[in-house]
Length: 210
Image (cartoon, rainbow, N blue to C red; front, side, top):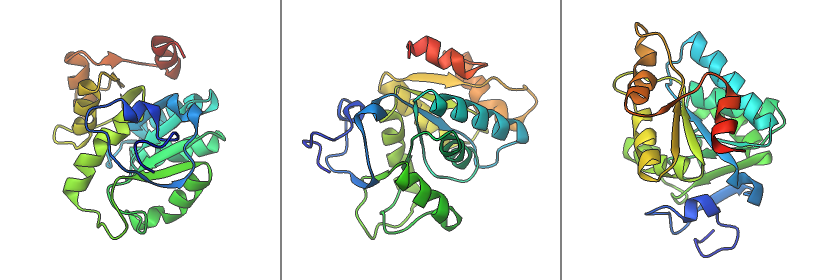
């Protein structure tokens, strides 16, 4: 799918540095413009897992497309909860469509492609290298109206998505956590820097007037 294609995602087309070409497995629909990204740590706590599940399932049930990165932890929970709600979800990959990383998410990826889409700017044969995931983060935020940060440690790749979102004029939402929890460092830090603190999924809908 080229950027000139009429089906190219409108949210993504409007960001600086939008991919000139996307490779897609599944379907991208016009209604996917009402999307929220839900991301966070691979090493989630039980609280983070429960929170990501609740927010994703609720929002998906309200017709919001859930965008995430198919990673272990919060990402996988967000995708799975959206599917459980009968909603749509998009996974943005840091590699070609001919391979799934991590490998244990092949089944989840197949379900996503049947109820949303797998999306990447990388051609077939591209390996899942670390630098690719940092680059793909701009697509996660670019597809979305806002990004919800559930959990993240002080050194977390999730910060990259929050930075991309801010630079793209997307709203950054964060779940406040305990000050003594390492996994709550990033959302608490982002809130201190101006991110919107949310306690309920309804807060996101009300803020964005969805």
